[in-house]
Length: 304
Ligand SMILES: Nc1ncnc2c1ncn2[C@@H]1O[C@H](COP(=O)(O)OP(=O)(O)O)[C@@H](O)[C@H]1O
Ligand SMILES: [Mg+2]
Image (cartoon, rainbow, N blue to C red; front, side):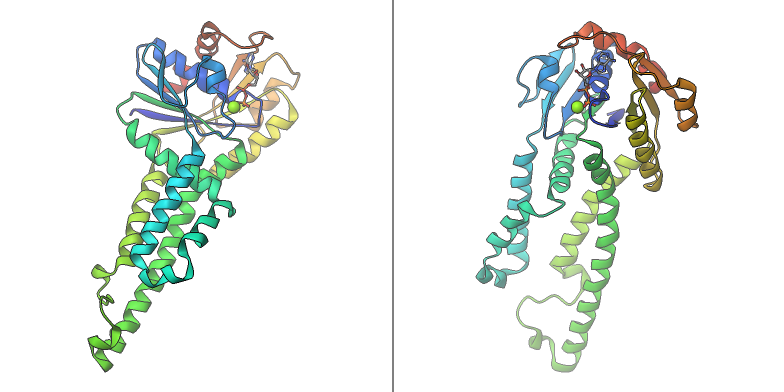
């Protein structure tokens, strides 16, 4: 994979349209492209005009896929249950399954499910030249981008706590003897299953963090010539900056449809290249030719 593209912006500005334009444009140039959606309200199928709940070739070497995020949430929960059972055998008496199963409705699980699904889908998409993501609404996308960093920080804290527990165990063992700890209770960090779990989780989160924050993932902001989408765009720009992530381009989409002064918009996003993408025409749905036209206004520049 040469690049991963992510689109951010207010609902309705044209994120799906821009991701479609990029995907068709790259495919038209002969590249292999994997275009997938993790938006719970998918609309890739509306663009391509067929069901893509299984990955399907839709144009030249362009493959489209709408991820069933709910299924990944189920897989994640099943995986969590089996890991916890392995770690804490005694917990089965308190109905561990039910506790973990109820996690499904806990705040933050949607982010976890999307991140988990992206991790799996991206693993399988490594051989494509380009991977394009049709992202969910802004708030959710930003939380997904932030999640790996948060996890990495928390894993660091949990690791320290765990090491303290092992230290206490060592003290008990030195006073009362190893047998006082009971069968299979680890003392050495390298034998401790909890530390191993934390290390595995760290690896996954570090991989996602490196991918999201590195230059191989290209973050593109889409706005329209109107106040609200620009205000939201500015918030997105600030959040990305706080996360230490770069914004590669601002697409001023549906150019000509609204009135906001273009020089003013450019000034707001100073330091980031901006591209004007015309409002093609008012119609039910755009055709492949329309997406290729939209792509001509910015794709080559952004690839540089
Ligand atoms: N440049 C454009 N020219 C014409 N119509 C556009 C353009 N960009 C987006 N649209 C239309 O605007 C609507 C919203 O676009 P969409 O890509 O679904 O937004 P988002 O994914 O950000 O919610 C769609 O009907 C789409 O066809
Ligand atoms: Mg969309």
